[in-house]
Amino acid sequence: MKEKSSAKLTFGDGRSIDLPVYGGTIGPDAIDIRALYPKAGVFTYDPGFLSTASCNSSITYIDGDEGVLLYRGYPIEQLATHCDFLEVCYLLWFGELPNADQKKDFDLIVARHTMVHEQLSRLYQGFRRDAHPMSVMVGVVGALSAFYHDSLDIHNAKHREISAFRLIAKLPTIVAMAYKYNVGQPFMYPKNSLSYTANFMHMMFGVPAEEYEVNPVLVRALDRILILHADHEQNASTSTVRLAGSSGANPFACISSGIACLWGPAHGGANEAALNMLTELQAQGGVEKVGEFVKKVKDKNSGVKLMGFGHRVYKNYDPRAKLMQETCREVLDTLGLHDDPLFKLAMALEKVALEDEYFVSRKLYPNVDFYSGIVQRALGIPVSMFTCIFSLARTVGWIAQWNEMISDPEQKIGRPRQLYQGATRRDVLPMAKRP
Ligand code: CMC
Image (cartoon, rainbow, N blue to C red; front, side, top):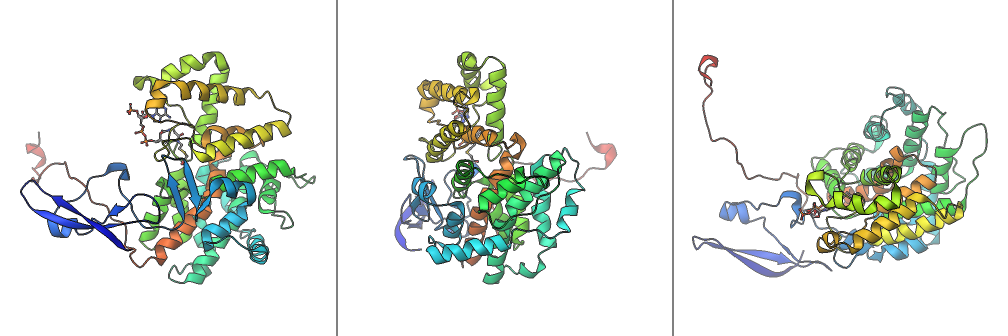
């Protein structure tokens, strides 16, 4: 990193310290505070890391005020329009888009890794049939480290690459198996003659008794969902993967920790929460009840949030939400669901919220999850599987970020400090003397 300038921090008692300032290729500069504690004996305090760059990265760039999202410099709109998901995986992992030969080779490598160890399928039997598929995902992905011992040396670049390709290739199989187990249907083996996303749909919706017919419009819609969710800078689950990986944990364990974090309703669980919210509102009267519902959302005591709205970084329209809305329309048209009540309700809710002072002043706009649930539901994906599909898509981002961290010479085990507010030193009293 190149020093761009310096910043002087002056304390009340007159002491001061100069800190280097680094510039990124785009985006805000960052003050290097590593010398702060050794030289001045103070920590910085930043709950939720609102002003903290935890690493330097060349993978994804977000400008939240302008609504810009770039993977390796390419705008998400162009990638979502001109590339398929595996090209985006190649880009995130290798840093460049593949040419035709590289794409052919990469597609083949991924296709050759789609099957899981046969014994892994027995692991599923240990879960209750009604277990949330995300709980199954956390367990099964973590268990991959018990099956693929030959690629666990994190200091070996080739091992890291094989693990990454295995994860990208096997996640659709693992997600589809979680679904099949839940509904009590036989697991479907992957079919490598199909594209990555078509194969996933075959494993989800096919049954051995009859051939699954792939609809290219629906495949393209799901492929776009995967592209839009592939990476998103240092969000909660990616930071979880990096933190877990900073101790030297194996990649499968790290991705499993990312899946656990993603499950939360403030993060990846939001698409499930958003669709549940729309379904409930529809049951209570739909479009006519929008005003009443928005009133409830604005009341801090109600505990109700408008799910699929707001974002830690985007303080403008989430560019992924625009693309998702477009895909939503396309899918509903293809399936003859032009009058889908939930889509109409979502549009009405969005319109009211975007004109309301509460949302305008807080810069709350729809995020990607506001429409992705409607698309997935139309594709026949059950609500409980939404976050699993998000984890499938985000796996490439997590593993690319993990690899970048391991390869970074400045990498250290993650170890935040704290502002201690607890009791000062005191002695243990004998039981009889305790108050
Ligand atoms: N509905 C109602 N009020 C909201 C919402 C919402 N969805 N989001 C934020 N606010 C309010 C919040 O109460 C606060 O108000 P005030 O300033 O009066 O206290 C203000 O807006 C700022 O919110 P914040 O909680 O400080 O914002 P944050 O950056 O900490 O949280 C968020 C971001 C995504 C957790 C939050 O907007 C949220 O919970 N949204 C709903 C869940 C959701 O859709 N999550 C998906 C995120 S995109 C997918 C992903 O990347 O995982």
